[in-house]
Length: 240
Image (cartoon, rainbow, N blue to C red; front, side, top):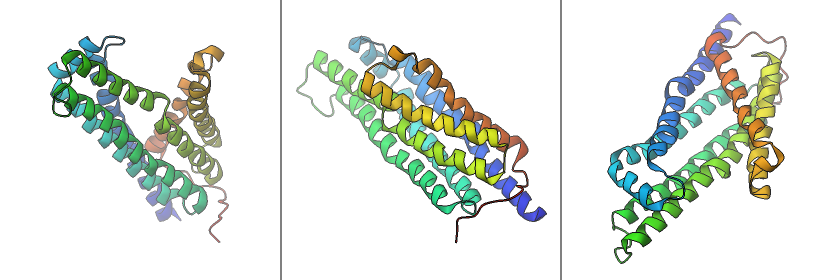
């Protein structure tokens, strides 16, 4: 039992390490820092100028987004190997939701890459400069909306829900962490839904609350990174 517990703790720490040391730094650098230096709201000309002036950084942001998504999926794959003995069906739902992120992010970054190609006149050379800037800005906005309120956030929420249930049922971490993960998953799905249905989630003052639901995810991974897994009192297995 001790060998199994140590093995599970090692798997949990490896999964959490992928987030804290690879996934999160790449995400913050590529999707927050770099894009903030390029995108200028309501100003296609300034945005186009920043993009062309920082073309390599922009390309790095595309690469980093694909990379941090890959690390996210690898992390969930490790958690799948840890939790499948708890409930294989929930574990599969968690894994499938994470894998769906790959397709979503690939499509989103295709918009970014196409915007760059348009500004470099490699797609529609017949566009004049203003048309190029407007179309590129439009594609960048599609990317921003897709990343902020689109299917990516929806699938993350759908991944957190079974993840939270598995943490709660397994006993590998305090059950409150599982509850917070479930709330976080609901928050992601609700954030996406209210932003689509209400155009601005701020109207119901929910965006300021829902944005903090991701803290449950960070707390859970921090627990697994520092503590590993603890010996559960009992595990309800649904593998029969």
